[in-house]
Length: 132
Image 1 (spheres, one colour):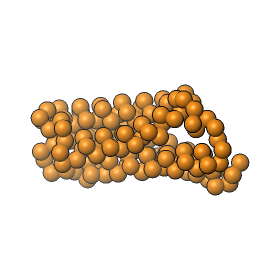
Image 2 (cartoon, one colour):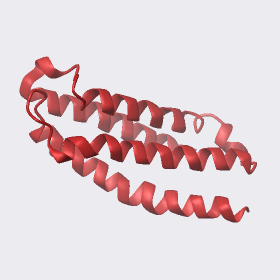
Image 3 (cartoon, helix red, strand yellow):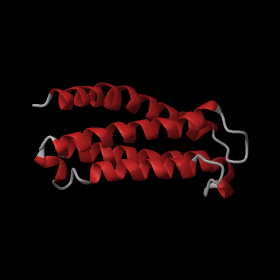
């Protein structure tokens, strides 16, 4: 195997799957109880979409390098959904925890609703990666 691919795979395995996953789930649970759409955004609410962005970027780099090094299952179903669902998760997270939160009318339930949507996307994406 290509040494660049092995290095990127190891970075994705350690940082992407282990470190960022724990931080994302912890931040989502924290925001489920503390996030208020009309209040000033906390540091966790500002960092949370960035964590998702880093996770999606690491996964996209890993996927692209894998394709260019000839790993065929990266283009097979259901794994092909994994990078695209990661990008969708990043966009949805920015929408739900940004200034124009579509759940703002839910008041105190905006945090739990937004966190639940993001957690379902993250966990379903993890299940796709495990199945492949």
